[in-house]
Image (cartoon, rainbow, N blue to C red; front, side, top):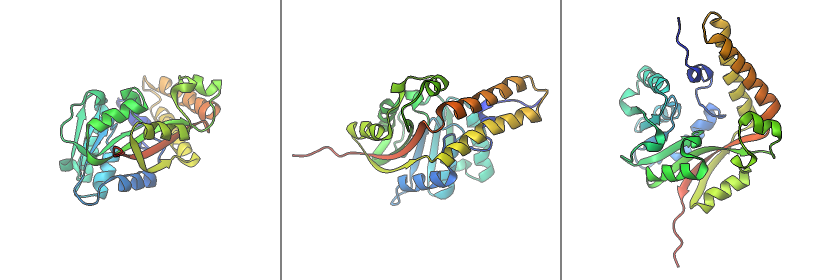
Length: 253
């Protein structure tokens, strides 16, 4: 019987595990990667290594290192790298990203949709800074409130209203912590819808194609619950911003 790994199924149609289109990913990577040297990219919480695979395909001179706690995602990423002929330039490590030792500094350090692994926005920036080469760029993806959340949104998301700030407040927290945005992308409603329909749809389709699998009933219920929670809870309320950030130089007097 075919094995079931929820994350691989839910992201089968949308391998970027965040509400971002392929074009948005391409532009963000292009803005973040240096043009004057062969870049090393480090993805903290890389999932299946999708961002790194996109970067390596776009920049033949780049190298990538990804860290994630999920061995199934790591194995999938390594197989995909082999298929694309990128395996020699990519290293994926099964490890807790918050405990990954500082080795070779990265020219680009990514943490997109994985700030929970570090305890939130600012702790994620601190962790990324420890791995960042001088003059490097952090690509950070984080949620924010498009509008004040109602009780349904908070219930579905399992958080309090102070879990996120609005967009202006999110950027202000970043700049107050000593970072300068050099680019940013706010996920559009269309990107959110594509992400959520893909997440729930690929899972629902899997249950229909594997009706005898012992995980199918639970997966079908999860797809339905997630779809209802999104549509009646946080759709149009939870936003997502991806920021390209560089360290702000200290002020001299």
